[in-house]
Image (cartoon, rainbow, N blue to C red; front, top):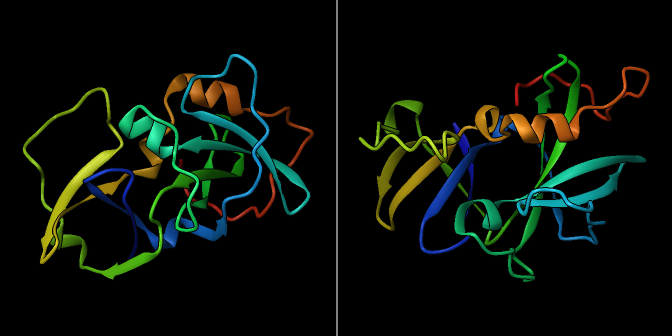
Length: 162
């Protein structure tokens, strides 16, 4: 399996590449008033507004640094109502891919109820890398924030859960 690796701090994280629609350079994001801190805002992707989560804010408690290696990862997911949509994830140092078997990732032995999206870990020459479960990334409050009226469609309707 192919994984995109990103690094918001000292720890490395991996997203299954099959869940990724596209990786874009960091573009201007329009903030959403009174949204949770990790919700960076929205931007226009292929003619439609797309919500964006800042993974550095979510994982590290600080906004992502504006660097050339900071990217917007477009992932496909399914909303609470069952509609397919895309979500943008701002990720620092998102320029590396790795090939690993799913079995290479093992339970970390730590249950973190505040971060249910953090999955198993794998070890390599550079240390640990932890999988991010996109399906568990959005909390109930995020899901409600990103729901759309039924008459509006999300771009790129390919199905993956989120």
